Image (cartoon, rainbow, N blue to C red):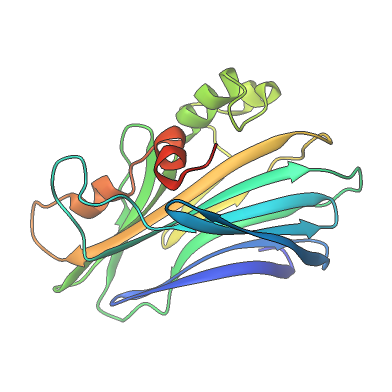
Length: 215
């Protein structure tokens, strides 16, 4: 982790606390604006050399298959390089304060990097886009600069999966470039062969933006 935790949002659950945040090698930040969307809200920050918009929202429920979850939370990070000064930034979405009886493990899918956490009572997932989807967005210059195409793919991503969540190394941007990353988490009562929390964290950029009202 980088030395300065500049932004963090927490989501308490019955099997731990999900912490989603941004760290930097520079200890400089100020609030620029607050924005309200149809289904979310955001705060705009200025760090040493980036404008950071972090959007907090609840996922659309019920899910497309009609199922629901007990609770869910999502965060979108829209990061724009606006000054030439060099700054290293990193995102994370990690489950902490985990009870002793919780089992953790990777649970990826097509286009999805995810981890699961469960005990006899609860099931939780944290998910984000995998390298293939980031590559597809780079191909279309969709919240991912096209020059990063060769750095992304089936086995290449800016996000690394840890046992308890994800850490994203935000690539070094050119002034004017912008990147989009998001994390989703959901929990529900544990039931065998039920995948509702997994489905809740498997979403694409444009579907999330359309739900929130980001244009």
